[in-house]
Structures are given as structure tokens and as C-alpha cells.
Length: 306
Length: 306
Image (cartoon, rainbow over the protein chains, first blue to last red):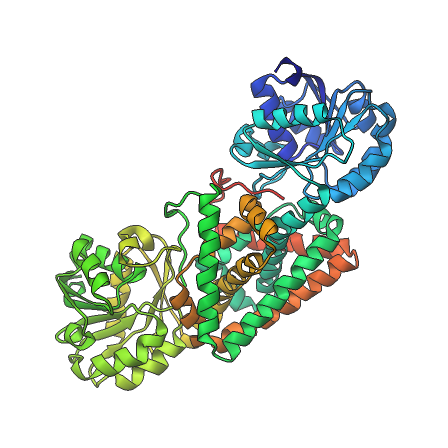
């Protein structure tokens, strides 16, 4: 396990996920030194105050120089520029990874700049909150959640394994799959729910004023759950939808068809069809509980009514 | 406040909401006796075991006879039949209310059977969990939530006030509005979210087998929140959509338009439009927090990631 300790870990971008990983590295003493790069001095000041890094810089190349682990924890739209800056300085034997929500685009944007001897192992820790920024991070965020690694074909298994053990140290269960498969699964489990939550909250925003204020007042009826999701980082999510465009559009199209079928059943009073659907969906909920993604106890803190 | 105590409270139907109210009546000693009517002996046995009623019966008329408060806590599709059975036995001065999620249909179905001297005050406690049945109820379910009363024009204000104080005793904030307005507000805050949650979980159900099992596995990315909502009572929700058809179809149409606009922005790479929308929706979230429908602290128990 001694090879799990990295000499110099560089974070390129350090928001909710990056800072949470930095907390883990500190807690488990997995990095002899940490360097953080961000776009604004304000972020770097916060990182300093929280003692999340030993060194801070506005220059990605300065951060990546000499690092044996480079973690890109920035929005997808920055990947190409970051790659251009850090590619020339990546040290042989280093591992380059990221924590983004779209993996096909990560491979597409980063593989061309990876020099021989550097290991590209894109990753996606499926954990987070609706809060953003380095002050929102905490080490326990990863506990019991899944991390998906998508090493391109030909990647050194030892590099993948080392990164796997790092995320396991953070408390995650690690799964390895292709970038394409990852993007389709996440389009369904995460990107579509976010697209829907953003849309429904937008629909409410456009209501007449009196109706809108009452929607907020009576939001406990289900709407409130959507507002939490729709409070997630706007730039990150803009980039997720653009980077995973094809899979998201495919899943959105399936969902829209199904929603129109539901509308039609409501319009024509097809009670049996509605009840069948609503009964089937309970099964999936049982699957989620059995898969350990949720405890089965009633959650008294989160009431809801019709 | 002494007039708050009812002599005989009859529950016609007693599931999650009815049993929770019965717990409140017991706790606060607001009913000298409680009688529960259900469609199955099994439900009545459970009610007996939990000591939620002093008397149980399969006959709605027997339950309503002599009651000074009759609470219909059954799915909407049963209202007409229940009305037919209890109308003839309702005692002068009694209050007839319900706890259903659609109020226009409640007025439409119940007003014709209400004899002179009986006060019809439809109500909707906006509280619940995804669990159903009398064993799922608990007195604290109503704490801090809203209850909406929709007395038809001409209703005796004293009757409305008495019911208002009953729900306040249960810990609810009470608001009075027209049935039509209620149905439009709830179509947005509750019925649309449920329609969407049922649909997205249905879309996932139809995925190819391997993809479906992974959707369950990685559901922490947002999908999990929808599965909870989509586990709600199928019969109750079938009836809600059919009873509030016009308002639900109107809101569904607005949402579908907005979702198609989002799809279009993703397809054509309109990053600015996406970011604008995602930034606006954060404001609504702030409104929900300020309205006290949610605590602002990070909810570490409910992680989510992209």
C-alpha cells in the first residue's frame, strides 16, 4: 500500500469535489505535498485559509510540473485549454485524472496532449451536494458512493489500480467501464434528472407573480426536491449537457415520448394505464433500496403530500 | 378552545393521512370517540391494533351516523359513492371535510349530497411521505407544513374556523383559498413533479436490462430523488391526475414546451442560454429556503453528483 502515497498532487481547479478530495488526502496523509491551481485569487485565498494546499498558483503548468498525480477538477469547457497548458510539463510516470461528469469528452480532449509514459485515467466520483466552491467540500462526501474510472484501451493496469485504491481510501466503491457506457448510464441517472429539475423550476419561474409566490410557499408537495437539484452549479451543468450532448438528447427524447403518453392517458381518462405505470415504478424504488443507495426507513425530515 | 373537541370523529378511509390525523386526535384529546371505516377488514384490523379508533366498520353510513366531524380520507374515485352512502345520515351541524389533493373535484362530488345545516369544508394538508396505509401514519407528519382549506362560497365561517384550529393543533399553518386556485397551485408544486417522477422512473424501467441495473446502482446522481417520489401510492395518484385533469394538462404542456427549448439549446450548443436558465433557477431555490420550506444547511445525508 506504500505506493498509494503521492509525492506531489496537483489540483487544476478546486471546487466542491476537488476540495473534498484534498480533505481526504490530508486526512489519510496520501500526499507529501498538494498544489492547487484556480482561475481566481479569491479561490486560492479560500484554499489557503482552509489549508487545502501547500502551494497555490494561477498557472496550471506551474502546478502540474513535478506532480505524480494531476487531478483536473474544473468545468469541461476548460479541459482543452488546461490540456494545452499542462501537456508539455507532465512528468513520465505521472497519472492524469479528472473528476468530471462526462467521460467521452474527457478522453477526447485530454488523450491528444498526454505524453508517452503518462497515464490518463479519467474518473468520475458520483458524489456531491448542490453547493459549490472549495469551502463546500468535506472528506466524508465520498463515503459509500460509487466512483467510475474509464481508462482508455491500453492504459497501464497498475496506474488504474493505484487510482482505484486512492478513491477506495476516500470511502468509494470503484467500478471500471468504457467512457461511452458511463456517459449513457449517467445521462439517465444524473443528466436527465438535472435537465428536468432545471426545466420545472424554470417553468415555475415563468408563472404569473401571485401563482409563483404560492408555488414557493407550498413547495413541500414535491417541487422542493427539484429546487434542490436545480440549485447545482450553473457553469458545471452547462458544460455537462454540452459535453454529453448525444446521450442526453437520446434520453431526453425517450423521456419526452413517455411524458406525452402520460399526458394522453390523463386527457383520455385511462386510469388503468396510469395505475399500471405507477405500480411498476415502485419496483424500481425497491431496487434502489436493495442496491443500498437509500435506506428504507421513512425520512421524516422530508415530508411531502399530494 | 373547548369547542375544538369533537364528540365523534368519523374517518371514511384511513391511510397515511387519515391515520396521522387520528394520532393527533389521540395525542391532543380532540375527539371523545373515533370511528374508522375502510374497505377491507385487513385495514380495520391494523387500525384496531394501533388503537387509532374506538369503533371500526366496513359501512360508511354507520361510521358517519352521529358524527360531528366526518373526514373523507380515501382516493378521489371513491368520493361519489361515499357521498351517496353518507349524505342521508349526516347530522345537522356536522362538518364534512376531506384530505384529498384536488379540491375542485371534491366540491363538485360532495356539495350535491350535503344536507342543509351540514358544513362542507374541503381541506388539503400538504404533507405526506412515500409510504401508504394506516401503519405509516405518525402525528408529527403535519408539523410546520401548510394546510389549505377551500370552503365553497356561503360556508359558515365558524365551521371553517373550527377546522382551521384543528389543523393548527396538528402543527399546520392554514391558508384559505378557492378550490380552483388551489388546484392550479398544486398542479405546479405537486402534481407535475409526481407526473415527471413517475415518467422518468418509467423511462428507466424500459431501458435494456444491463443499462437498467446500472441505473439503479448509480442512482445517487439525482435519479434516486425521483424514485422516492415515484414510490407514492398508485391509486391515490391515478385519481389525483384524473380529478385535476385540466390544470395538470395545462402545466404539463408548459413544462413540455420548456423541456423542448432546453433540448434545442443542448442540440445547438447554446451555452449562454443554458447558463442563464441554470442561474435563474438558483433564485427560486433561495425563495424556497427563505419561505422556510427547507433548511439552508448542506444535507450531508443526501449526496449527489454529476
